[in-house]
Image (cartoon, rainbow, N blue to C red; front, side, top):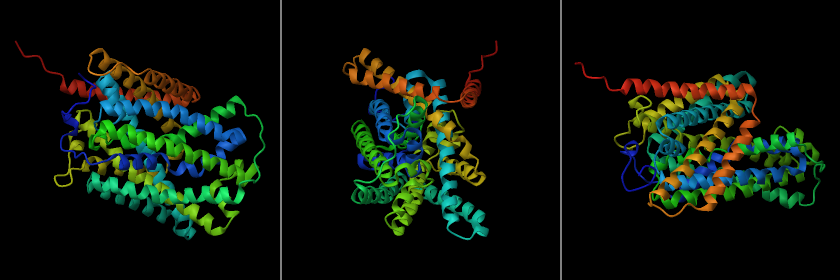
Length: 442
């Protein structure tokens, strides 16, 4: 029955090695979620809802928790390369799968290029202004080349890189929380003005953006060992840790900066500057390391989306090749990082951040619906237990939350999304015409 995991290796996973364990996968999820956003989002959320920002963070965590429950259920059943692409493809067919896969990798490559460019900007700002443009390009391209080389070396090396980089990049954030609690436990706070509905909606979008990214690591599900156990465990551990970290960071920044938090460009670094300049430098270094670690996690996961689409015949077959020695999808990795490099050098992604977030919301909505369909299909076929009512609640909550997020978008942004969906349909139509059998001549 389609959608039910078994011991058969799907064609798209042939040649891959299942070597990623639950701890490495959880580290990858944390690494993908806790990216550069946490270093700037607290200020924007405080500007939107003041001291109610931690409540907005918790509300986003609840919505994301519902989506994570659906992804965990999907990961147990469709433990194959592509993550949400696999869920949607199995539930709704190849056309929907093609659209989901295209939106997923396009959204991620835009984010990858943007973060590489941001990392180049941070490093360039520390040197002479005359060399800033050159340094920016060199850092962006060099970083992408490095993470590509690590991942071409094999999924084990890619997972080890993520597992090591994640705790290292979290050190500045954990230091920030500890120092903040010790220094300003009874400090000043921003005015407790009641937020407007528009302000709370804005805070929800910002919070949702900060929680996105966990699906990147799941794209490599075809290389997860014991996926039925590892994927739900990794997602639960990661979401719990990220929620506690985000709430703590928001509370500490509000206590340390008070009303000034809403206008701060670098809230965490500004807060640490009140304690010691060395701590400010630590947070700036932490932001750079966080961006670098995110790139490593993204290049570990998203190129597998191109790989899966190629194995399914949607994209050119060359992207489905694996390295004869390392068994990594090296062509997909090279192509993906190449596109990200072009975006990083051009620096055009800043205007597309909201579009990227909107695209992810559509993928989350489709994944929640797909998992619900797959579970009901399995229960109807008596291949698994009766559908859990908790999964039903999670699916409804996840779908409703994403509808709310998309309702807050502008007509221009929704138009861009429609264009991307149309292009996905065109790609699938061209593939169908190419593979359509030609009737025999009479």
